[in-house]
Length: 232
Image 1: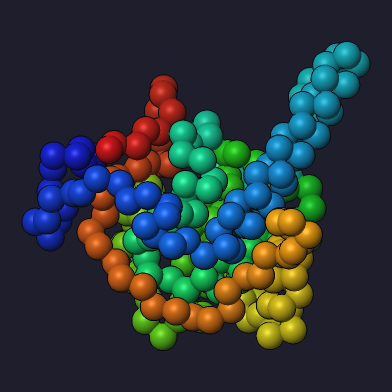
Image 2: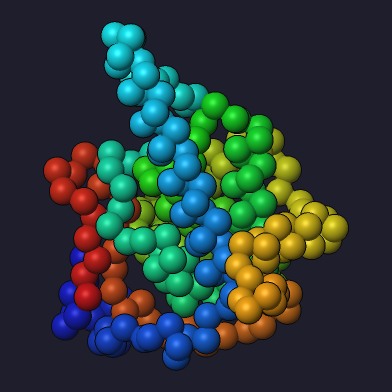
């Protein structure tokens, strides 16, 4: 793990965190994070209710589907969904549209495997994997798995495994039509209305600069006794 005074593999010293205002973050990040936070909260509340009911009946705990088990960690990472999305956008150079298509993949998973829920234990790995695959489908230039692994806080070997798992769970159906893309954009845009105005998602594939990773995170501590931490 790198600390603020250490250097990256390229020899450049890590710099202080850039504020969201300086990043000029695309709206899709806030819309997607809001949608996913609500989804995770709803699913975990559902699990808690079911566990409470089963406990009252002395029937043990609720058993969910195991389709997403590969994406599960022992505990939820300490980094929030909004900060995690911001980190992926900031360091990978992927276009904003990749986050929409990544959400399409996650939504397809939940429909193909309805007994497997998106929770705080798997949402981060699902995000970095789905956005990476989306970038390979959409962007003319994209970073390799090793870069996404470092950005996402997992090992390269694990991300390779997660990518294959995602593709098989989707039955390799990773193409998204323009009509479906617009439909999901509209769906996300309904998440946030400011002064009666719907915030529109940026459709353009605009390039942006990338600096060295400023801090390293980990979401992979599957056997760690403490939650993953951010070194800053």
